[in-house]
Length: 377
Image 1 (tube, rainbow, N blue to C red):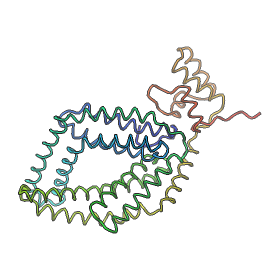
Image 2 (tube, helix red, strand yellow; image 1 turned 180 degrees about the horizontal axis):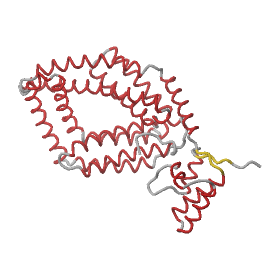
Image 3 (cartoon, helix red, strand yellow; image 1 turned 90 degrees about the vertical axis):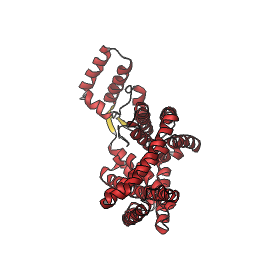
Image 4 (tube, rainbow, N blue to C red; image 1 turned 90 degrees about the horizontal axis):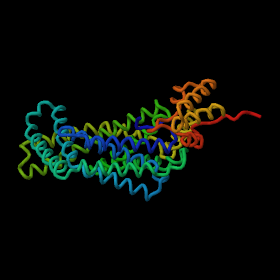
């Protein structure tokens, strides 16, 4: 499934499922990657940790500060073990991007690109081969996934998300305003981290009104990319200054610094108006709008079903888990008499490894994802 809620799931199941998918895919990628595949596996694993941390941040108040800090810190530390190779690769990509943007300078930037590529290989060899970071991080992600799967999120209501969403939007708005007032590298980087959180949260909530939420997702994505490129250029400029001081910049230091400064000016001309749009609301107003959209989405996606059909569906799930072939055939016939096809039933129920059981059906009823219409007396 995708990095977003599914109307068929309860909120607790949906959030746990999102994190489990992210960490499972990251773990599998790290274990399977060989040679040239490792750079991509490391990149995807680091993204997975950020996306998982964002989900935990969204329900921080619901799961409690102790559990939040434990898992957030564990994910952060796991990602840091892989940061060296990825950070080195980003610098190589930043030089290549500048060369594509200004083709006349590509030849003069080539020696610097070669120096940074050699550094990337050395760091990758040390971290991924000598320290065996990929296997270690894969083990850590498996442990974190198991703990997150056991976290208690007790409600399907928007209240589980409200404080986290308000905190994310408010901090992002403040960080952007601070960067706009005094655009230091540190403040711009902070603004980037905060808008990334909002981007992840908007993606999780995108089904509540796909069109408008999709526009918010796209705007946050673009703003994060612009701020990310600005940050990459800031780090690249600092690296090149250090290399130039050592006389190991390949003679491209001055050219690179000029190109980076020009590009950063172009980026900020787009960053400021886009950020104003993303953070146009006050935090309370933003959260109030999300609350209304969430409740409307939940109301319109409830599966209303008769008591007789509900009993048949519940019996079907139990038969699939523990029943005989005759039991399954008998229940399918019951459903047909209720006007329900198996395919339609499965389409209305959430996906679950190993299939759903009767207890899962009861949880859907308890959380209001399935409403039983009782017969009138």
